[in-house]
Length: 153
Image (cartoon, rainbow, N blue to C red; front, side, top):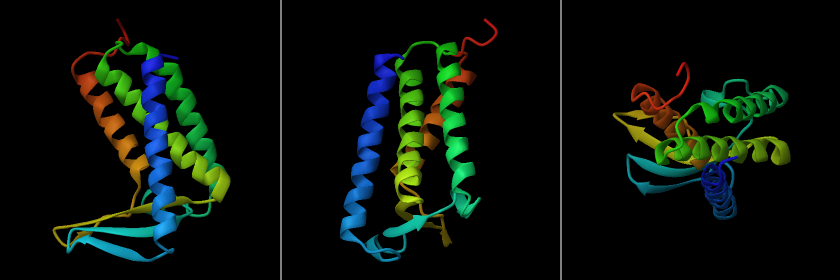
């Protein structure tokens, strides 16, 4: 594996796990701390599903999806040009997926705590791993649009 991708993945994983540990120490389950009124709250939840509580209680399926995702990412990351954006994208994806996978394997749920309210809509509570995954996907979409993937070349 590219050492840069591995390094970004490790950093993302450490940030994710550290943030989850701090929040789980400072807040009790279902408690919250308003940071910016009517916009951002730290709200500690233990989520046994995926986004929007999809597949709630289906731990085995979620673990298998995570492992399969990691295998697919590992397989296809070498089809992309070796540059900063792509290395960061794959590192963030891997670090985020592994961060949530660790929670599922060792706790049976994922620790979520970032809660945003935008235009009177309460977005589902999420964590840094989720953020890393979304940013990684966005970076890969940009890479594909810019032709930085080598698929078909």
